[in-house]
Amino acid sequence: MMWCMRRRSRTICLSLAFIVVFLQLLLALVPLSIYHPPCDSPPSPNTHIRRELARTSYAPTGISGLADPPADTAQRASSDIDANEDGKGHVGTVPASIEVAGSPGHRDNNGAEPLESGMSKLKALFDHPLYNMPGPAVPEDDWLLRVKPKVKVTEESSQMWVSASQGSYEAVQWNSSSVSHPPWLSFHLGISRWQLYPHRDPNMEALTQQLATHRIVSAVQKSGGTQLKLVMSFPNYGQALFKPMKQERDDETNYNLYYFSDFERHNAEIAAFHLDRILGFRRIPPVVGRLVDVIKEIKDITTDRKLARTFFTSPVGNVCFYGRCSYYCSTEHAVCGRPRDLEASLAVMLPDLSLATRRSWRSPWRRSYSRSKLAKWETESDYCSTVKKTPPYDKGSRLVDFIDMVILDFLMSNMDRHHYETFEKFGNNTVLLHLDNGRAQIWASLQR
Image (tube, rainbow, N blue to C red; front, side):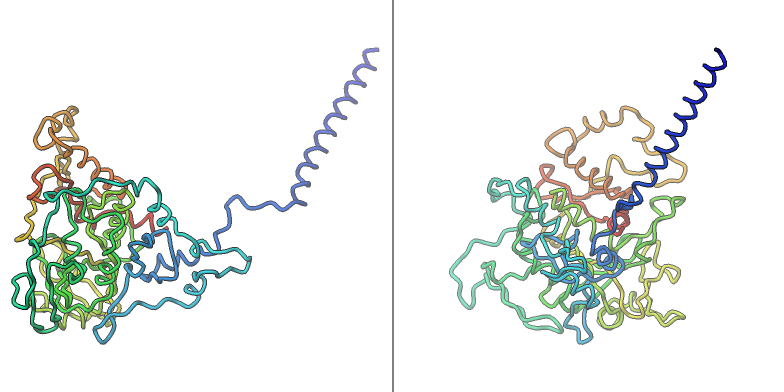
């Protein structure tokens, strides 16, 4: 009897084992007959376009990428445009395959419409109601600069600023009418207590076009700082701060280096400008990218003798220069074209200090800039409470405005914010200027 029961239980176990194996084989074979997409979704039809744009310095108007500004600002030519051989400026050409693929109405081989042909994500973001909430009118005292009250205009009126054409500068006539103002002057007149420019600035297109395409008539080195910077002048008397490309776009900072040992990056300045707009701060002056001819647009037109003496030709035939500064201005840290074209960022200059004095403030969370010493905020547990009781952080919006800047620096990995500036006219009741973002690391994430 026991033997029969054992035999019957063994038969049941073998049957169950056979059924389990059969079900496993069935589950393994069924998916093979059905289309199964890979775990990683295939790249969008225009992924190669974005990667190509990330590797180059071109931004054609036919492509609305993730970093494109809204249509109202129309900064389509603000990234990486070079000056042409006759000095008038031209837009860098883009491979035909990229331009055609990004043109409106174009469809790829699968019949899908490219993302770039529709509304860009950035434009859609800026069209969101949160970015377009109506605000109060700007009081007269909140403008940084104002045109004198309009008087009867005559040919000899003191309201008319007339310049005779000297050298490469244009003969211009400016008066109290905003129509006569060049883009850089309109930008200066649009600076207020709480922002450098409005969200939908009708002047932004003309301003960025000037930075990206206008002929450069003067190039001199800007004094101060640890690295090379130039001040570029345009025929309409506008000026821009020039920061050159010093290493490849995809070069990342060695994690063994200290933050103060890193080079500034021109594309970090460009990315910081767009991030500042996305956050709704508008406290970074407009920045664009551009290709500059090292010979025709710097060496041949500079009046800076010290700068002119630092030009040389590298062993591979590239034109290089290094300027004069406190740390990174030497042949070992030279800036070189390829062989003459140099990629750089150009940021519109703020009003001259004689017109709008700025005050520099030491950041309470400044790094120690020492390899062995820690800062106070790294050692004192109640440091934040101390700062909140210290002027000017104990009144008004200064502390929360500083936190805005800290958030910006955190998002772009900028550990070099040792000082910040404000316009002296507004005292302590104003926003902070987010200047000098060259050591930020935001460029690395945007390029991927």
